[in-house]
Image 1: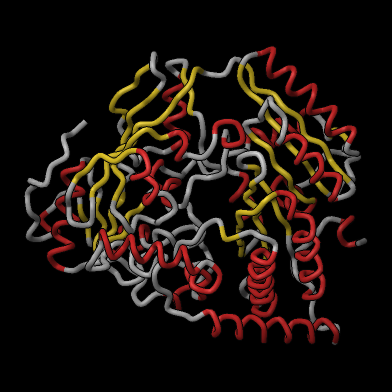
Image 2: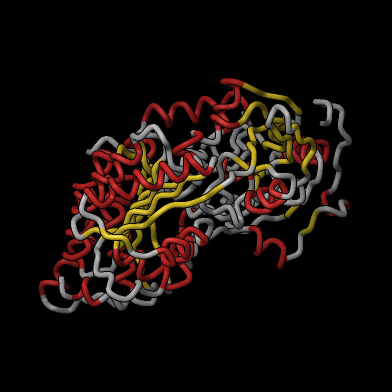
Length: 494
C-alpha cells in the first residue's frame, strides 16, 4: 500500500495528462448514470456535462487532480460504475470526473486472517470471481454487483445487498480505508472515522483503497422461492425468516408485476400475487437445516413452492434483478426506502391504491438487511412519450415518500434527486452533511448539489406533483386515463 503523503506533483494543465480527456464522447459517456429519464432531470443541473474525465490508477494521481481542482476551484465528481439511479455521480456544474474503474487491483490477500486489501474501483462481481479462484469469497456485495464498484456502493450507504442479512452492512465488513481528501491529502482511516464516507456521495473525499473481510468459499448455496396469495402472509414469512438463528444471505419479497416484467412470465400454473425468495450458504449441514426450516415456515405461512427452476433463475439474476426491469419498459421511475419490515404492509397497499386511482403501472421489491430493516423499492414503469402517465408515476412516488416518513422510514439513497427531501424530512441529517462539507470541503468542489443543496425547493416540487396527481385522477374519472403498459392477466382482473 502506498504511504499517505501530501507531496505529489502539481498539474498545470489537464490536457497534458495521458489519463485525462476532454473528448465529447468520453464526457457524454461519463456524465450520467442509470437515472435514464431523458430531459426531465436536466432541470436539476446547472451544467450536466463534465469538462474533463480522468482515469487515475494511484493515490498520487487522484491527489494530483484534487490539488489542481482545489487550486482552480473546479468541481470534482467521483465516479464508480455509474449504476446508481439517483444522480449520485452526475455532474451538476461541469468540472472533472474522477473515474475510478482503473483502480481495480488486488493489493494483498490474507487467507489466514481472512481479509483483502483492494483498490476501491474494483467491480464487485469481478472481484468475487477472482477470490473464488483462491477458494475465497466476499461476505457482502450489492445487487448491482455486475457493474457497481466497491467505493460506489460505499458512497450510497452499502446497507442492503447479498450477504447483509447474515454479515451486516458493508461498513460492518470494512477494517480500514485509504482516502484522498478534497485538499489532495492522502490518509488512512478506520473505526468511526469511516462513517462519514458511507452514504455521502464522496463529499468528504475520494476512497481509493479498502481493507475488508473475506471468507472461505461456501461449501453449498441453496434456497427456495414460494408464492403467496395474501400480502400479510408473505410479510409474516419474511419476518419469521429474518429472525431465525440460521441467517440467510438473501431474503426478498416481490409482487406479481415485478416478477412478470423481470422474468417475462411465471412457471405454468403459478397464480400467486406475492413471492418470497430465501437463500442460504455455508456448511452443507447448516444450509440443509436452514432450507428445510425455511420451507416449513413458508408453507405454514400459506405459501406454495414455485419450483426449483424458477428459484435458480432468480438466484442467477441476483446481481442484475434490480435493474433488469429497466430493460423491459421504455422509461422507469423508482424510489427506494429504508424501513422496518413490520411497517411494509400498509405502504404496499397505499401504493396500489394510488396507482389504481391514477391508472398507472406499479410494482415493488423488498430486500432484507439486518433482522428488521429492509430496502423497499417502488417502481413506476412508464413511457415518457405518454407525458401524463409518466408524470403520474412520479407523483405516486412523491406521495409514497411522504407516507414512508409517516410510517417511520426514510429514503435509502439520496444522491442528487433526493437531496430535495432532506431538509424537509431529515433536517438533522441535512445539518450533518453540511458539517461534513464545511469541515472537509470548504470550497464546495466535491460533488456539488449532492446532500447539501438542491436547485428546486420541496414546496415547489410538492405543488407540482400534487397538481399533476389531481389532474390524473380527473382524467381517470372522465375515462381518459389508462395504463399504457401491458399487465399480467390476474392484475387486469383485479
